Image 1 (cartoon, helix red, strand yellow):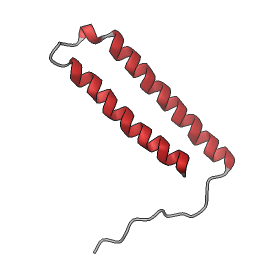
Image 2 (cartoon, rainbow, N blue to C red):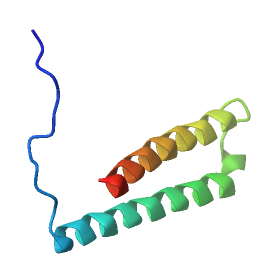
Image 3 (cartoon, helix red, strand yellow):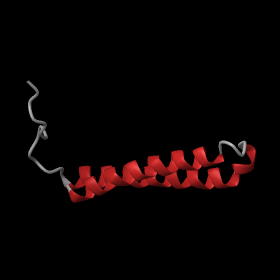
Image 4 (spheres, rainbow, N blue to C red):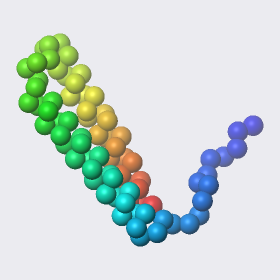
Length: 75
C-alpha cells in the first residue's frame, strides 16, 4: 500500500528563511527573464523548424516555475 503524502513538518519558516527563499525565487525569475530575452535576440540563429520549440520550452518551464512561486507564496 502507498501511504498518503503529507508535509513532514508543521512549523512555518522563520522570517529570515522565508526572505532567503523569496530572494532565491526572485533570482530564478530574473534568470527566466534573461532566457526569454536571449531567446528573442537569437531566434535567427535557430533553424526555422525549431524556433517554436525553443519558445515553447521556455514557456512550459516558466509556467512550472510560476506554479512553484504561487504555492510558495500561499504557504
